[in-house]
Image 1 (cartoon, one colour):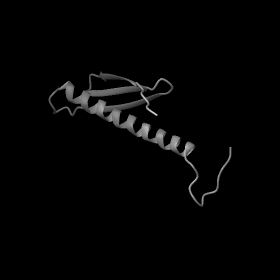
Image 2 (image 1 turned 60 degrees about the vertical axis):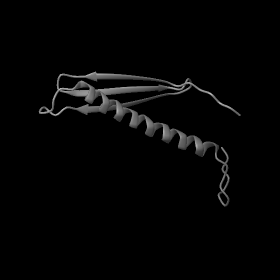
Image 3 (image 1 turned 30 degrees about the vertical axis):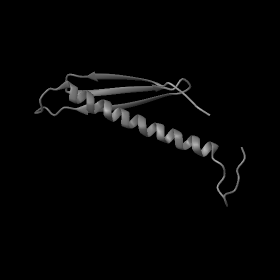
Image 4 (image 1 turned 135 degrees about the vertical axis):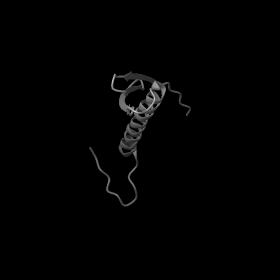
Length: 92
């Protein structure tokens, strides 16, 4: 049975005066929204290249989001999985 879905991702980046870039990402599946965060801090001796901070903070937020998605999938699998041989069947 074919399945098609569209999920929307919003990524917001913020940089403060101290050289810290923060990323806030929201994944909207239409039925669920997951929120993740990431940050990057520029060392004072480093050149001020905002794109690098954006890339690091966004990448870290996306990693956080990926971990949340995997955890959600694992919980969902446990919720619908058939009992394994030798395992007692539980009822709710």
